[in-house]
Length: 371
Image 1 (tube, rainbow, N blue to C red):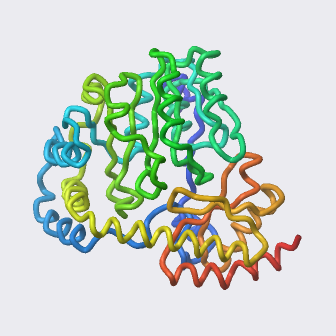
Image 2: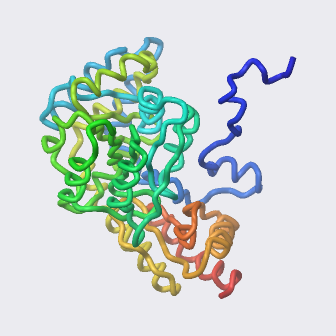
């Protein structure tokens, strides 16, 4: 008997992979210490002191399972958004929820539309449930809404993924365009509208919650990983109609949430003053990154996120050389994985100390890489 015959044919066909190589793996494999962790779109500013206090207090009750209904957090989110808690599903970050959506929607061989070079973890889940990815190239470094719609109609796709603001390019569409796109989709196509970077976007980017709350083929994804500084806590949530939100109860891990993480999210929602301060610091850090890039002859792209994508002016080979070279100086960043996006590098915002390390290392790396 084959050692792998116990697995399904689909599982046997999939590579064992991690969608992102973490800085920890880079440290292990290259023997280099990360000094500026500005590559994973985390918040180096961290969560609010009030959040850390709440999480420390919650540690005393960590011997108990978390409420399998996530009632308190759903209620707090509902009050924050002015909707019913029954319109909200909580999960282990947006990544966990994406996997659950794939399980709910994708039949083997089903076409799933997304952007070529878009968020790779979504693709990982689609492949894991036997879906067939149909990809649409970016247009002008933005996701191509017209192209996505055409692909959905051509393929009769049951699922389409669209991130606004976008990762990895940091670009965005205005709210009216997003709503028009959602309303133009066939009613048989579920839109995953990933708004992970919504807090850092310009006014007029994110449609009001009430605009799409009654549309049964839209799920909006939110997270505490970015502006709230809780990436390691793994708290995300989906907003949709009653039927969509409650569908997660059919397949989710009901004891999958950490009590400590949930209390952190509750405290984060209460501390909106800290959130406002962090958003201002994110904006300032974006400007600092853009200034450093320009000073070194590189082109920073406009960003609505907590990172800046920087056009390095040639191709993926040069961009990777810059990424690798910066790591030699302890500066961890990433880059898009698909051409032509991979002509760029992607730098997350960080503390003034992080920015100083970047500013010192980048010209040395560019000199070593050459033109």
